[in-house]
Length: 274
Ligand SMILES: Nc1ncnc2c1ncn2[C@@H]1O[C@H](COP(=O)(O)OP(=O)(O)OP(=O)(O)O)[C@@H](O)[C@H]1O
Ligand SMILES: [Mg+2]
Image (spheres, rainbow, N blue to C red):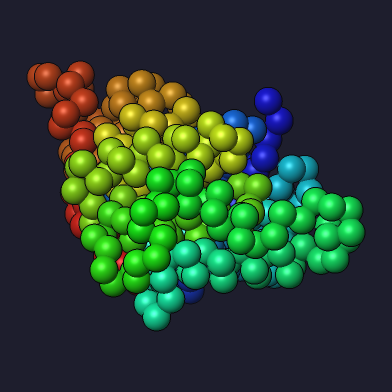
């Protein structure tokens, strides 16, 4: 499987704060990759660095192309789609219209070449496909303010899909959702990835991330402290220590830590939105 996204030695500083330090991460074709870590670990900064919203050092490649020097709109045009930690829908547009705006931007950006080649499906069809993939068709004509938070989050994901990305970066799509809504979101995200769109999922909801991702990275204070399958990460002593605030030695001596239940919710799982 080839790498869709690969980063090597990605570092970001905000003044004296080293928000990210030498992060190497890969998302491969067909994969849903998780990125977890406590509040302030650098997860959003990583998405910002990849999409070009903060200056970063290191190498960032999208399908072998070095994109590290490009501005955000060029990275978006090359296929990087993202959602934001603070959801922002157009409240005076219906769900369908919110998607149409994103689809329209992407078809305009893709240029006339695709139209002449007959590859252009038209923004309406793209928006309809996104509605279908996330099961939002019966909400299509409603206004975002009429929807519960879980549905609004799904609309945010659908809107990112409507821009026809080749890689999706999701920043805490499950924040503020109850466990039922979170499970529903997870099932639909998995469906999106299985339909052919690889994704990086940042979230605080450990049961969501460990339940649906193929591979997981763990950040703590800007550094990767673990990576592996959900099973490997779940059993990693350093991860347990970072999440539960104790030392690795403490964790090792704690009875019953093989149970994942203790790791389902992180401290500060109500993310601070900015
Ligand atoms: N624009 C900024 N200016 C200064 N410091 C920042 C800025 N953005 C983030 N930081 C700092 O960088 C570090 C990483 O923040 P980041 O938002 O990436 O963490 P996070 O893992 O996304 O946290 P959360 O789970 O709360 O969303 C924190 O110490 C944060 O205070
Ligand atoms: Mg964040």
